[in-house]
Amino acid sequence: MPEDHLHRSMLLDYYGDLLTARQRECYELHFNEDLSLSEIAEQCGISRQGAWDNIRRASDTMEELEEKTGLIQRTLETDRHLRTLEKLLDRLEAQFRKAVPEKAAPNAGSRQEDEANPDIVRLLQEARNEVHTLLKTEN
Image 1 (spheres, rainbow, N blue to C red):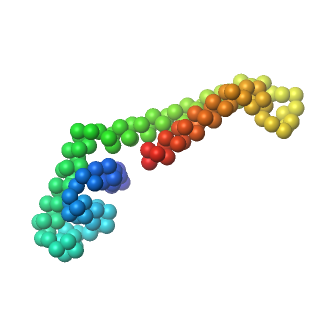
Image 2 (tube, rainbow, N blue to C red):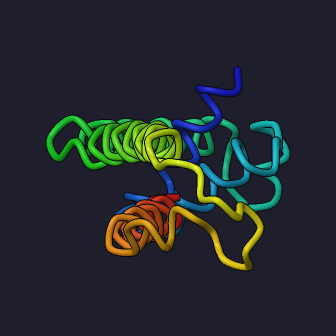
Image 3 (cartoon, rainbow, N blue to C red):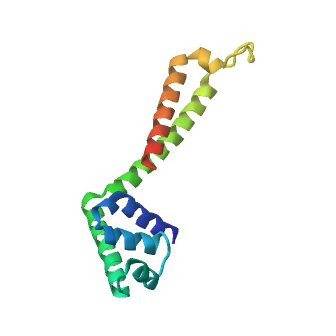
């Protein structure tokens, strides 16, 4: 399940540093490297049960932290809001470009919209740049 993989990956990104070294190692080997419990046990010098216990504890710890802090959930919500803002900016720009009357010489060298109201064009671009910057930092 891609969503499940994404969730586990985000848990590790957000909360992995709060795990013990062994828990993190077992969790990464199991979910990121797709190793079996036997392979993890052999590589870490522990029993299969020990490998499973470390994975389970890591998972429980990170899920509990997410339940308490909601960091991942807030990040996902922020990302959705930013993508909605991006779509709204696209629609606003399209409406603005429709509303600007055609100039007598349409290919006079610069865009008519820019000449008609440079402040609106500049603000739209600044807003779009800010949304793109936030989307990059969120991911």
